[in-house]
Length: 227
Image 1: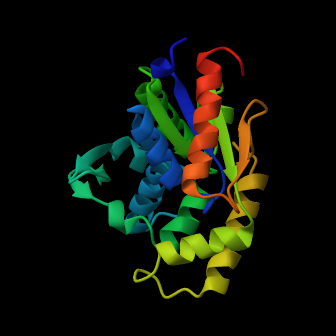
Image 2: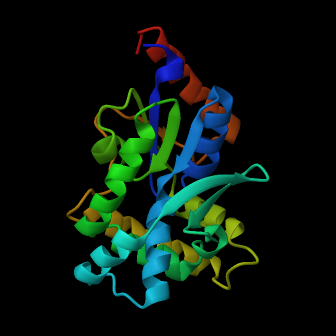
């Protein structure tokens, strides 16, 4: 199989560098980049906006029937739209982050987004970023990566990302990350974990360029049938 026909998944916990690395890798390969976490955040945002509890499956199911998400490139930035509303900047608050963690464990939400994700991936030539891309959504993906880093390192990264948009302290961000790690890795439905055939990369002490080079070596090896 040619590399240009690969479907690539990049999973891992918050702050491991998935978003930046996924965008860079997609750009290097000329692939599309899909932030699946944004889709879950989109559902969480709409639930909060409507006053729906993360445990009210009936209300969530009815809401999902009314939702229409799409990604658009706006001034070279990938933006998420819910209907005609650009919600990209509204889904990155601490409230939506924790709601997304809770709501992503609901089977009704996963079922709603599963078909959407698989439809996007049918033509391949795409990099999917998420938490269960290589284990649940695309177990047949040709190349799978799992990125991780120490909780403190991930907290520092997330803290700097949120500067100006949040009043949280570094300690609060780290506590949120640890709590979300626990929620995501112990949930009954699609827990956060590395696929058995995923290439694991610890990004704690690596530069972005070093991570990309490790990924490109794997992809080149798969293309040539060595790995």
